Amino acid sequence: MVNEYSSGPLVALEVCGEDAVAQVRAVCGPRDVDVARRVREQTLRAKYGVPAGLGNPGGRAQLGVHCTDLLEDGPLECEYLFSLVER
Image 1: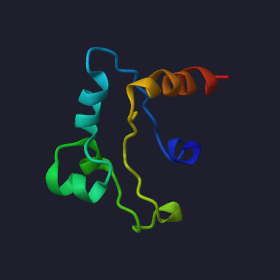
Image 2: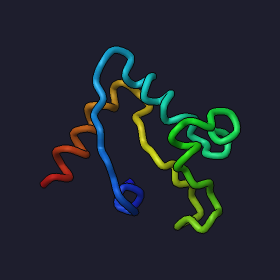
Image 3: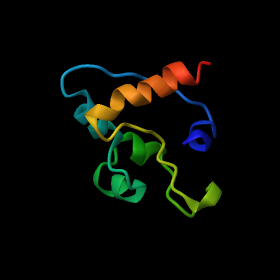
Image 4: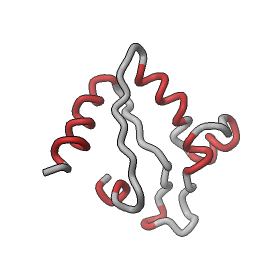
């Protein structure tokens, strides 16, 4: 995760509100970049993700955006990005 976050420019956002996780996930799109490009071409992953095998370090896909999977993980990820990294 550190390698991914530090591989280029990063903008970190904490989005709060009713159903925020589901709404942000909809904007991000499917986790598989190829699928995102086929079925949700206006999502962030479709626009900015790079599929696996295209010269990526380690051959892994670069999703272009990260969003939490679970509501419960949001506070931990925000603490990591906004508090721990700052130190």
